Image 1 (tube, one colour):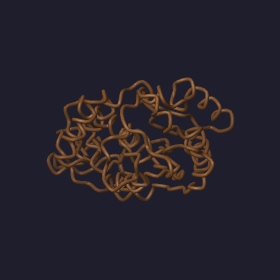
Image 2: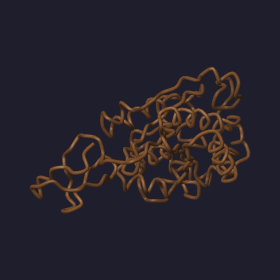
Image 3: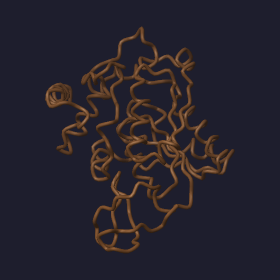
Length: 273
C-alpha cells in the first residue's frame, strides 16, 4: 500500500488524506485522482455493515485509520434491500473495498428470532421510535450474535478490532445497543480473543452521524433504512421516520429520496415527532 501519491497540482509525491470517496492532497488541499487502496495503516478492523446510514458512515470514518473489512450478515430480515446497499456502499469507495466485503447468510435465524423484522406475517409498526409499539422491531439478542461471529472472524484473520455503529437513539428500544451491553460484550470478547470492540457512535445522535457522513462524502444515496422490504422506502416505519428527522435536523434532504418522497417523508415525520 502506498503512503504517498503523485499530486498533479504539486507535481510531486505528496501525503494524502481521505474524505469519504475523495482523496485530498494534504499539501495543496486539492483532490487527487487515484483509484488504489488507502494510505498504509497498521491494524485490521472488521466493520459490521448493515447497509444503513450508521454503519456506512462508521465504515468510511475508519478507512483512513484501519485496514477495514466490511462484514454483512443476513439474519432473515424482511428488508433485504440493505444487503444490496452494503455491497454498493463498498463498491462506491473502490474495488479494493468491495473485494474485502464479506457476506454471511444466516437467514435460518428467521425462524429462531421472532420479530416484526423477521416474520413477514406480522406488520411493521409505523411512527416514531419513542412509541411503545416499536418494541416489536427488536430482534432478540441479534447484536450479541453478530458481534460474537465478527469477533471470531476478526481473530481468525488477525484483525485487532471489531466496530459497530450503535448510537444514542438506539438505546431506548434496543437492549443490545445500550452502553452497559456494549461495555460488557466488549469485555467478554477480550476474554476469548485478542480483539477489541470499538463503538465510536455510542453517544452520538443520528443527526450527528448524518452530518459526519455528509462531511466525509459517504454515498448516503446508496444506503437503505426502511424496515418493510419494499422497492422504495415506505417513509412511515420507525426507521424511515428516524432517518428523515436526522436529515431534517442537519438541513440536508435525503439523497436516497425523490423530491416528492422527501416532502412526504418530512410531513409524516413531523406529524409523529
